[in-house]
Amino acid sequence: MRFSAKLVCSMLLVVVAFFSLGGSALLYGDFTDHLSSSGQQEQGQHGLVCAAVENEVLALLRQGEAVDRAAIQAFGQRLGGAPDQVRALLPRTAEGPAPLEQAYDSSFPAGWAGKLPGAGQAVITRADGRVWRVYRSDLLGGLTLYSAFDLTEAFAARTRSLRRFFMLEAAVLAAAGAVAAALSHRLTRPLALLTRASSRMAAGDYALRTDIHTGDEIGELSESFDRMAAAVQEKVAALELSVRQREDFMGAFTHELKTPMTGILGYADLLRTMQPDPAEQREAAGAIYHEAKRLEDLAGKLLQLLHLDEEELALGPVSLDAAAAQAVRSAAPLLRQNGAAVA
Amino acid sequence: MLEPEKEKGAYAALNRILIVEDEATIARLIEVSLKRAGYECTVAHDGLAAADLIEAHDFDLALLDIMLPGLDGYELLDYLRPMGTPVIFITAKTTTKDRVRGLSLGADDYLVKPFAVEELLARVEAVLRRTGRGGRLLQAFGVTLDAVGRTVTRADGSPVELTPREFALLEQLLRNRGAALYRDVLYERVWGAELADTRTLDLHIQRLRKKLGWQDHQIETVYRVGYRLRKED
Image (cartoon, rainbow over all chains, first blue to last red; front, side, top):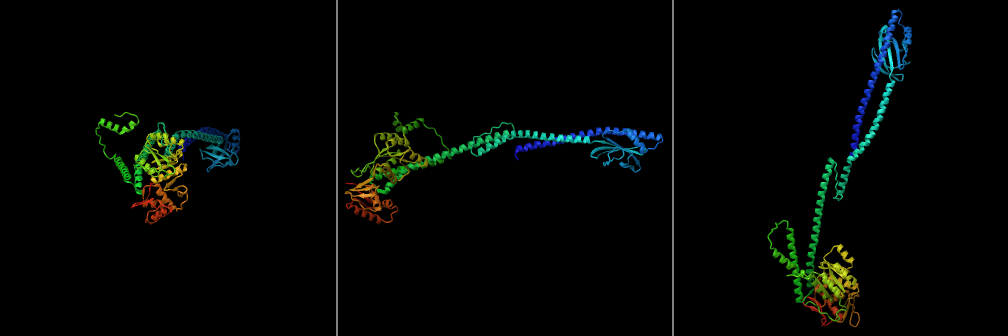
């Protein structure tokens, strides 16, 4: 995987992780708060109904009337209902409250299959396609009151919130991804430059420099790379020079070798082919001798050159007059030829 | 000192050759060899002297060294080209590049040092032949040898029938007129192999003498050396 992609993935991972955690925590906290605040209201209302029921029971008992289905039903009707609320008043025996179907007064939906709480407790349950919180209080007169509050809306609201959150997260991810990609591309671009410079150098172009001044590790790498490139270039130039010098030397040497060889071979061939007269013979022999001497000199010089760096050069004072006079002597013919007056 | 005499009528045309070479030894060697083969030679040791000579005389061929003081061989070539004088470069510059350069500048041939004198002579002859400046006829004692047509004719015009070896042998003798040639060299040049025994060579010489009617020591036997074609008395 490319480095810039790795950078992007890392950044996105961090964003997703913390965004999700944070968001979830937030949403959960909000929902719990909401539930508990509505819970308080529900309890209040449930409490009110409890009190009303107990008042009625007390009133009935004071009047000497029975606490029976008819009385409770009548009471229930008087009490009325509220939207999103249902209640049920049931007789209670020693084993517990009667099943819901036998309630004196109930506005619970028919066939209610949800859970019912224990005494003085509340439970959140699903029934009849909706979400309820059910409270139960055991009251005077052998009655039990169940109050169920419809929380479906709250839960639906929570689901909507979650959905909105996910969409937000998706958008954040996309935006963060784009920005991260752009940033990481910017940051890793010098690396591409370094790679290109390296392959150019490998191909033989030592003149390229990367020149990256980002003030960070990549900048340092670039600087170090450029120094290396300069060193390589110098070295290669020096080697090429050395090779060229060697070739030049070999060429010159061969030429110096060939000339005497031609003379020697030519005259020797002459002597080999025919019997010359004495004058010819002397000339030929003389030429061979002189050319061979030249070769000997050449060999001597070559040996000296080869050993030049091995020996210590002894520097000694030289008379400038003598050196100049010798130079003039050697060059005299050439100088005269070119019209200079030579003393 | 070393000049072979110029015999009248010894050669059909005496070619003038300019030798430009700064190494005195080599220049002398070439001069001697060419004069022996019957050419007239002029030597110059540097480019400027050569240029003066070119201006003053007409030459049939120029042998130029390339590395010269003054004008170099290439510049001299420019000088010679408008005159139509054929040029052979003689030089130590052996690389293909140099040879191509020399030839494409207009040289007729290119000889590399060190060279065998024999090769030099052969190339000189080839160039002269090619540029129409010498149908090389070699003559001696009334006999004419045409090196190109490979014929030998007597003074009266009648042809002499010679085998290829006899022809080659006569040619060698003519080309080295006046020099005592060693037997093994003669044999090598004509038969292309090392001399095993002298009988073949001697026999051929005998036959030549007979066919040419040279019974008066025109071809001299040189004691312990070989044979020499005498110069015209």
